[in-house]
Length: 335
Length: 124
Image (cartoon, rainbow over all chains, first blue to last red; front, side, top):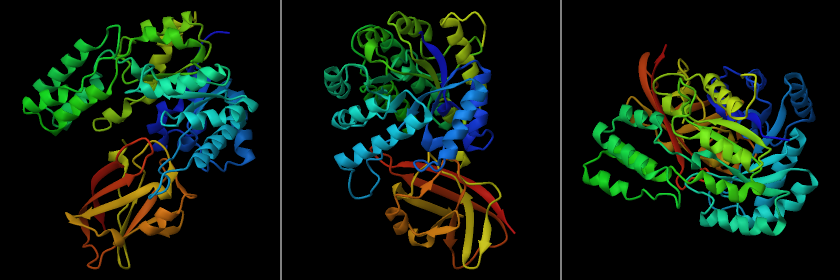
């Protein structure tokens, strides 16, 4: 078994939101790119969740068969703020995660993307339930968190006691942003940021990112932008630089047995077929050498930064990333 | 994140005691109504008091207080709902600038997510 190509339908959210594509259309579009894995957010494209009728799941399996696709991950949410005046209690959180495990199992998913805020003790309490249903719990590692972050390490300490069979991680490749995304900086400029200040922020980010060792901390940029007389949009540019993350992809090697799923986050696939900010040409070989057998699940997130100028073609953006992956996975036939 | 698509073009209608228009959620998934923190509406620069705004979903009408209590019903992603506003002077025929913001309580965000749209809509 080896790594395969997949798509999170998160990538096509705008087309679905505007009712340009149905759930089935999204699946068909992914299959047409040669992607075999389908990742879904029930709360996005499966109205009625968590009370979906059996007929829905039958239809779902019918689609998987028709398009030759396989369910990969279900992205769960944990609404700790469901009630205005109190947070969910431990038992409520556990039953919410179990509800999602049931859904994932009915879809035929092998992985649940566990929301990063899920407390370690809640994940731990759900491990036997997940194991019984053949679903791996994979905590998302999403910027600004990374493998060496204290919260992630707290989870890891628990996971190590159980081993990687039913628990682990879904690293989001947005933890490897080497270059300040052009989609973001250009949007900030259109919103009213100052060109010279944004350039300063971009240069500072790009200079700090890309090296080995601990991820750079760019929180100091805000004070500098204030000193430069930056406006509210310039400050947003600085805050974004501090929230985005470059961590060394080599660190993936140490966690490979626990990497059950990969969110191949991207903001912009350029005309020459590379991602503007995230060095997939370096990351994918590390995953493959580490024996990754899961899905490289495309997760496009550029649409929200372009909404003010045009309705972006999400399908084309995903197709470009899938072509890149086909190449990096050594597929002879182009997607 | 879907700000510019929140207010539905051409949806402004007069009602017996005010007006209504259609909206979508400013977030990438659907949520339980109890997580709706607030709807804000401004018409031609004038802010509508919170207690004059009702949320209509699939034929049912909710006050802000009623939304807060309902963790079962979900406003689905991309689903079109209606905001009904009690507006004593009603609206003159013609164009009106509607500004609408929605605040949602999202577990992983420190402050409510707030999406805002503004559109000029005509009423007959």
